[in-house]
Length: 112
Length: 111
Image (cartoon, rainbow over the protein chains, first blue to last red):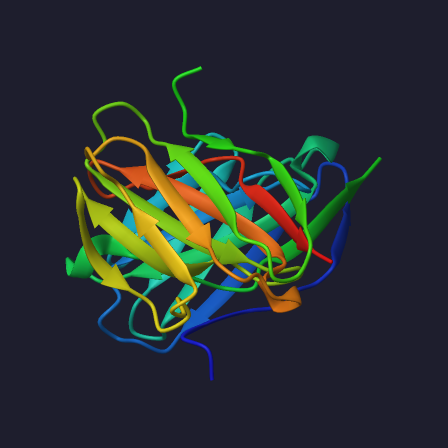
């Protein structure tokens, strides 16, 4: 079993829809949680990072962490075709070099 | 552009050849990471440096792989005697705190 699980999709939504992307993790020692966006054949781009449980909002993006259920979510409001990409969740411990453990990524397509 | 840069962007090589990739981190970032990403998967951690010291290596990093960061600035990743299974995107990231910023990656194809 992978430490971070993510549905690979693909997920297809109409423009303007609210998108919900989710991950689960198994290591209860994970304290930091990130969402990266990756366009085809490019490097991952950091979107959001949160520490421990709670919500964090940045523009159209909201990241949510529920440590009691080991569940990580990213919500995208008013989705745009330019949001079409693969979204990767990642987690890490406190200390230990800060290496990231990634999910497989969810491929999102926002259609006109 | 002051982001993480990687060179080359693409490399095609024949099985058995040696290859070397370079990563230039964001200036003054003391931590540098290498990850490997295969198609349809998320990046997997390979190794990381704090300044010039290599502090952790994944078991994914076989004896054919070696990484250096000689002056605590740029880093190189060398793969000796490449195998077809080494075909992947090799990603470099740098950090000075909690956030890691990735470069564009080097895509390796081993024929």
